[in-house]
Length: 305
Image 1: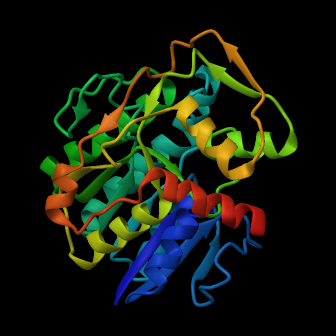
Image 2: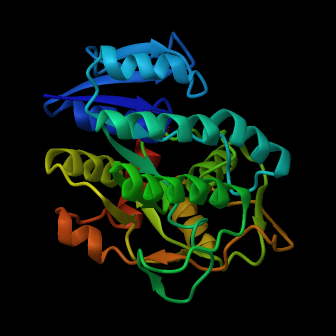
Image 3: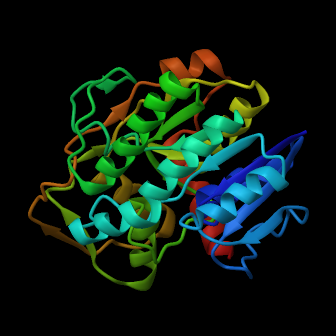
């Protein structure tokens, strides 16, 4: 059985991944700031260790004492709208500790699966972007991911770091918080339910690639089971949807009319981004959930809870 250390796994993506891995032959160690975190009720044998990414000494001990085979890195405190001061904090709390940990796991021959960004790291494009597309982040969130990606590739050539870089598009689905600032589908649904205004930057015609979190979790499990390494994968659907299209689906499913306020475009926002998933599909079985089906399931779960 593989021993997996998950860093940054207490969010909705991490919770879904934990459930997917728990069904397989994996021992899971979860690093969490919250020692009372209960987001894996169905996975009672997950070992919870209280700590954070900046505690590098603790993580080094975990890697040795728990005989970790793979580190799954999802930690980030930024969103596309983050500012310079928040980026500086990310450097201190996430990026610099990650660099030190990467050096250590390269020496221990431990593999790392790093969650990057399938939108912010590329910039806007009118084509389906593949993994070879030039990297031009237009916000601090994308730049933070690029720094870590570049260091991982350097360590791969210099010290033989074993890695997989995943570049997910806009992830949505089960366990996502509707009161968050990130994730348009969940945020818009939450504001519609509570009767609040939905802010849309621009005319609502910005195109995004939305991927269901269940597909993300399955991909991670398949990569682990097939022992894939030293690859970069886009993780999306290859299909774009406008923000207004999302609103229309939500209005239909919630039977609520959205109250929208349009605001001026921001320089940090992409006009269009869809991902070419041909490479991923050639490595693992991948048939992403159609958007409307995924949104319907999300709304059903949301209303049930």
